[in-house]
Structure formats: structure tokens, C-alpha cells
Length: 319
Ligand code: PBG
Image (cartoon, rainbow, N blue to C red; front, side, top):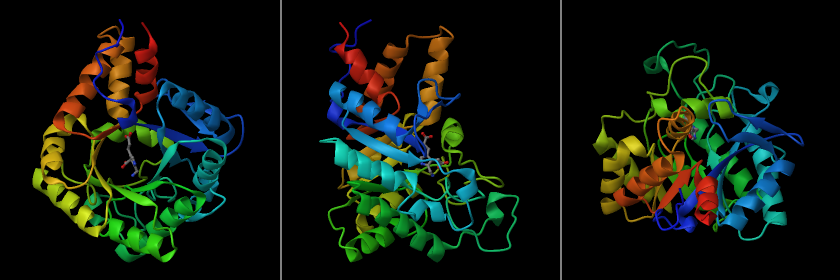
């Protein structure tokens, strides 16, 4: 089947996520996400170049932290020699016209896998007993964002759902004279079952408890809209709804009410479902991707982050 004329989303509106790992010649396929692999920087560059040739020139980078560097303060996240600053600098040096977004969170870098710094001496069993140290988390997120921006990131994307994260990052960027770096807030990020495969890819599953203490309740549409409003007030240049498919109503309302461009994140679980169903012969992968992305666009997303971005660009070239 050809997708020519079917996909109504311009390729400039698609953002392709990548998982980056230290070392060289590393291509580590992610079991729960067929077609996606963790890549070392030397493998990432040619991959981005291939995607760019097909028309995908926006990338969102996630760092994979070597387990031995994980600690309670997420220090690998803001080390200039960490894998994300290194990857960003290499892309900016070697490739032209690539817009680089970086995910700014702590979960890949903390030993316990939570998105924030925890108050000390805590070993909670449920999310409700988790106490995030808000001030410390904001400081750490700001340090990570500054490290990414210094390396050349065009956009930093805080995804920890810590209160005040966009404002704290904006302030830190301005203070470091990184005024040109923009912020994409993961504003309406729901505590979702759809992130499962991502946590394998980024090795970021929490060791105890869950993320319901800081991510949004999926029944709560108003909270999502409030978060979007707050992020805009704090200086977000773009806002996001995540996941996409189960939240089309939120996307639609956010598009109507938000004064900033809106991204929707077609997340790992949504990708995995399509892939696994196609493999089982339940549906045609291209047709399914076309329908899903069209629905996200129809709901009002200005940009779509999707692990299918490069596939779509490839399929559009087929006759
Ligand atoms: C980091 C983060 C997550 C995702 C993006 N940034 C995982 C989470 O919140 O648990 C999920 C993306 C995906 O599932 O594709 N906090």
C-alpha cells in the first residue's frame, strides 16, 4: 500500500525520538519497541542524517545512564561529559539544519528511578508516601537544562512534572545567557500505562512506588489544562499533551485554549501496540499509523513526537 496522498501531516511537524548511549558502535535493539534501538553517538549521527534526507529534521534525545553512574542526586544528568551534552554537541558540529530537543528529567539518572530528588531516609512503598524534594529537584532540572543548552540544544523539554519546572529552567537559562534556548513543557503528562516500553529503553522504571504522586490522573482533564496554563505563564514556548491517543479530547481543548504551539507525544506503548498488532497480522502497519497520526493532527496537534516519524517519511517516498 502506498501512503502517497494519505498522510496529511507535513514532515516538518514530526519529531523523532532517539535513545543515546555511551561508547561506540553500539546499536542495542529495544525488545518492546521493534525497530528502535539505543545508539551510541557515532551510530546516532548517520541515523539522523538518513532521517534528515527523508525529511525528518527534528529530533528529541533521551539519555541512557550507565548504571554505575546513577545516584540519589542524578549527577550524571548535568555532567558536561554525559551522553546527552556529547550527542548534542556532535550533532550541532557535524549536521546542518537539525533542530535538537532534549528531554530534561531525573528518572534515567536517579538510582531509584523517580523523576525527582526524594527527601532523604525514605523507602516508601506507595506513590502517596513519596516525598519529592521540590527545591532540590528544580535546581537539578535547571542544571541539566543548562548543560544541554550549553552543548547547543535548541529546545529543552522538562518532563519531571515538578511544580515550577518551566519557570526555574527559564530563569537558569537566562542567567547563563542562554536566552535563545526554548522550552517545550511536557505540561499535561498523565500517569500512563503507555510508558512501559520507554522505561525498558531508558532503564528508568521506578524501583519502588509509582509516578501517580506527580504525574496527572488520567481522569482529570481540568488539571491538564491548568498545567498547560501554568507552563505558559512560566515561559514555555511550546506545550505538550502526553500520551496522545487516549487524550485526543485534551489535545483538542488545549489547542483551543493555549496560546503556544502544541505538541502531542505518540508514546512508546502506542508505538508498540501498532508494531505488535501488525506483526501478528491484525492490521496493516502503514494504514494504522496513517489513521492514528491523522487523528492526532485532527484533534489539533501542531507537532507530533512519534517513533514512527522516520518510517512515515520512508513510506511517503514509496510508490
Ligand atoms: C521521562 C519520560 C518518560 C517518557 C518521556 N519522558 C517516562 C515516564 O514518565 O515514565 C515516556 C515516553 C514514551 O513512553 O515514549 N520522565
